[in-house]
Image (cartoon, rainbow, N blue to C red; front, side, top):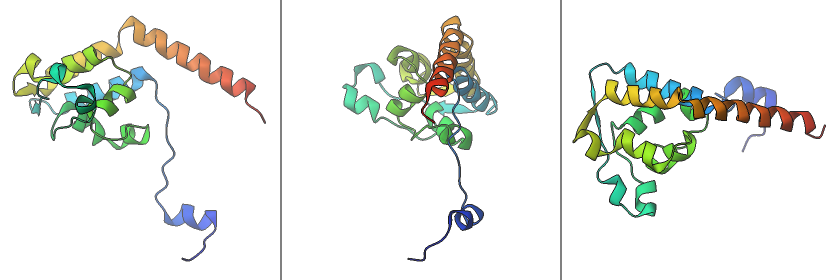
Length: 150
């Protein structure tokens, strides 16, 4: 193994620093990605509401709304760890009911129009609770920074 300085690594490596986003910014970005697909259809997830929780959290499907989010480098850099139902729940700070309405087959059939899912995601991003949570999150971050040890 060859030892290198930090400066050498920064020049040679593609280093990405995690960029924190608010819940609203994450949801808005996701809605924009889905809207950019125009009239394309997305795969839906089967029977999310009936699956045992461990199975549901690991559920994933190619060309789903969640896989579209995971394909975005900005959302991955902000912390979206994979394209599973559980990762989306955690990253986008959604309830099971909210994510179920965005991704499940029972709401759309076998495929969902990307534009329709985009509108639903955007609705979540503009809700009053999302705006309140964003302000609270910023206050917590500012408070931690203020009292962080030097």
